[in-house]
Amino acid sequence: MQDFGAAFAEAFALIAGLDAELMAIIGLSLRVTFSAVLIACAIGLPLGALLAVGRFPGRAALVVLVSALMGLPPVVVGLAVYLLLSSAGPLGVLQLLYTPTAMIIAQAILVTPIVAALTRQVIEDLHGEYDELLRSLGTSRLGTVATLLWDARYSLLTAALAGLGRALAEVGAVMIVGGNINHVTRVMTTAIALETSKGELALALGLGIILVCLSILINAGLMGLRRTAERMAYA
Amino acid sequence: MPEVLAIDFGDEKASPPAILLDDVVLERGGKAVIDRLSLPLGPKGVTAFMGPNGAGKSLTLRLIAGLIAPTAGRIRFAEGVPLPQQIALVFQKPVLLRRSVRANLDHALKTFGTPRRERPARLADLLALGQLEPLAERPARVLSGGEQQRVAMVRALAANPKYLLLDEPTASLDPQATAAIETLVARAVAAGVRVILVTHDRGQAGRLADDICFLHKGRLLEAAPAARFFQAPKTAEAKAYLAGDLLL
Ligand SMILES: Nc1ncnc2c1ncn2[C@@H]1O[C@H](COP(=O)(O)OP(=O)(O)OP(=O)(O)O)[C@@H](O)[C@H]1O
Ligand SMILES: [Mg+2]
Image (tube, each protein chain N blue to C red):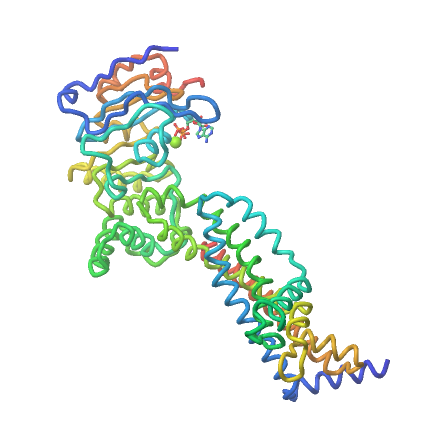
């Protein structure tokens, strides 16, 4: 048990001392996750809006599919991206396997359905409220989507933060396609898994503490946003 | 079921109608909520639709605005189907965007294609028109019901519409706010806007309307000049409605 106490002490020392290795791992984690969420938003926001506002054959099926994909198991996504990027795979020539780019791709695939499904829900509700007004003003289709996206901005930020939370905590997909290579593709979650299995509890704990803090921060941000939105009656 | 009375707008019949509702039927949930509604609406003035809750007044305005299509029958406009910015509808429950008052009006102007350079001046005019200057930067949805109604009203006027459809624009407003809205309506009418109004307020109908159309359970039971309608309603339903004891 004194091991345990010592590990905690060492973990705090690493954090307080801004340990270079620790910082590098955190930095890569944030870079990968933020990039993935940005890409997921670039695809998921318009896709969700299209599903909410558009009327085309297959829409209902697509809505169900996107919702179902929200629960994609990360290891399966990791496996699929691995098969795609491995040297024998269709995108093998790009030589992306075991790079941060591969991790970004895998996480973007994980987060896009979350952003798209939440966006669809939010935009559909708002569209129900705005539809007659916007039509009576003669708003174009593009103008309608733009108006809805802008007026739902707080809720959509919530969707993006939800995606961020999921990507940051995810370990299966980045482990498979990143390979957890030291100084190259090692991120917080994979490092925790590795260090724990090696018995190097200090680094694992230090990363764990930071991960939990980030997660709390994200959730606090979510709540703060919601509160602001309500206060401003923009919600 | 009472007979639908002949439409009796007096002199107005002389001028050809600007809007003609021609045997309009609207079915919802397997039943006709608007039942064979035929009505010529002249080119000028104010027509008020009256009738008990659920009579079909709001649906009639939506039909005229082109927001919903009739199940049968037609709605004709003498000058051709108006562009969206030529026909403005103020909803019974105002729908405002989750933005400031100014941004709500600016959004409408942008949608109507008002050039960017002209918008600030137009905005100032509109805010002044609705006495909304002190509220301009407030989120529209925290305003009181009356203030929201005023924003919706001014937004409807933003495009200088030819036709202005108002669905109970002063329900739940205090007397002062009601007077302000009525002044806006009167000014629009003076500027040649054709106004169609839904109201339960007999006094307001008397002040604003030239003609009254009385709807009951989706059917037009009376259409007459306002003075005549209030003095001598012809159907038992209209009499009961005006006396305040119509049983549905
Ligand atoms: N989608 C729908 N499905 C079924 N019934 C409907 C639908 N839309 C409207 N109705 C019915 O049509 C009738 C007329 O509705 P409308 O809103 O036009 O009434 P109104 O005359 O404006 O009443 P109020 O004075 O209460 O505003 C109501 O009985 C309403 O329940
Ligand atoms: Mg109504």
